Length: 270
Image (cartoon, rainbow, N blue to C red; front, top):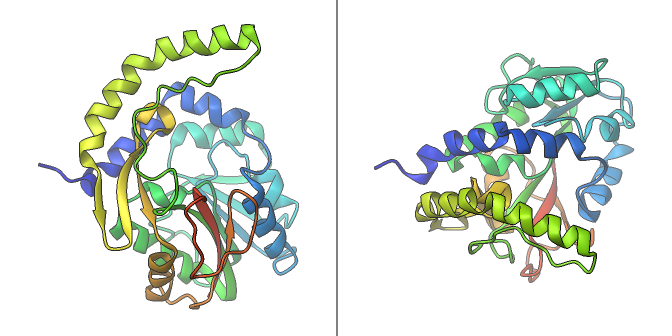
């Protein structure tokens, strides 16, 4: 039987390529959360007008955010439909089909900043996660920065039970629309939950879990702060990343209670 790690790539790619996923990513604009905004503003002055590589750009949410820091901007994504959507929205941006696990198209020390937003690094297996970290380290200049987000194994999003995606609202029209949308998507959501939740597994400092997003159609990596720092050191990054919480943008210390945060933003230096 294939393991969760064997199947992650196939499952997640299928979810990203779904029509409703593409439509959803096209609509996204601005910051995902206060933590992302704080972390991005933190690195902006350090890398102003220097080369930036944007991994997993999706349909282009981060393009204007990062080009405000530098016009020397390059982006990649491994989902062809999202690459097309990003190019259509930002035809003057350098956007390529590419995989964060293989950055061989880029020379050593090419970028001052590499960004992997929206927990994109969590979509690949632990083995491939290390490939991403090592590839990013290689393409960064000395002293360069890797800004990325990762799901918190100790947080409330870890091990989500079945969610049908219905949120109560006092607006009657939105209530009816939301209920009808839930009924339409319920068969797929339930089928995905049954199909993928048996792949859940816990290990030392990380977990592989079916998540409720995309109608329970993805399997992702959750990690503790300690384990993420260990992985960064193994990939030859400095041992003291700055860490910002998604919920409120607070800087987090390595020994804090992190139970209320779903994910974190890491600023790691080469």
